[in-house]
Length: 340
Image 1 (cartoon, helix red, strand yellow):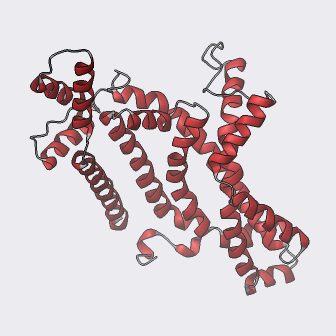
Image 2 (cartoon, rainbow, N blue to C red):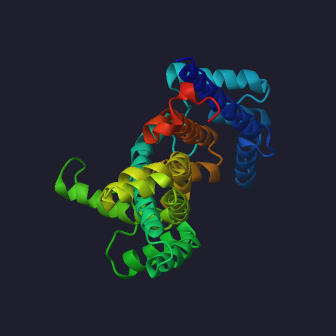
């Protein structure tokens, strides 16, 4: 039990330290959010021929960002964190003029929908293709799949997304060109709306899936080839066990642990990569809102998006650490593998 408490405490410390570093860097960087808003408003007033009151503009910038430059960073961070924990108050978006929490709450389910399906499909394909290649090691099937996987690995996911959007959506009209759902459909659990959601999410998920599984499949192949040479696998064959049972119970299960670690870490990577994917497909999830906020110097929304991505990363690593023993019993429980 002490192990789990200690790991949980480490995760909280990691999360808070990461947020503090980001908070401090964003405040210290030249041309930070307050300075950028002051410069923008002063320029607008000068272009209109209005008199510039620097004190008034400075007060307005502080009100929009919630940042008082005279407040020491540790105290400002404490107040910002206190408002989030006690009042769920991330501030108000400068760009969208809405509470940041409401904006994130609107985009979060859509980003999770894309990431979960893309990651599960990619993870399943990684294991299946990697084990299949290892089982047919040295054959033409292995050589052909290796070439295919390496080609797919060399294609950046955003290039695949742009190509699929251009061909499958704009030229052939098989999928929508953007958005999250058909605008004419009534939101709810009805066939038209649900099918529309699936069609709008198909290309973003497919672009992440096609190129996402490639690198993992090569790694799974290498791990499986190593396991195939083990004595217990030869014993299973001599005992006359079926191929399917050998592949699932002996080969896959004993090869999957490093891939499982990469899968859990890939959750964070998938959410991060969705920033570009959501922009390409105009899919208004957390990533799309984050990029719009970064371009517009919307400080409250950028920091809230960072909290979202950081919490996903830390939680995924913590879950991976707690569930190693379930995936591979040789890893044992947390308390019995302090050095694992």
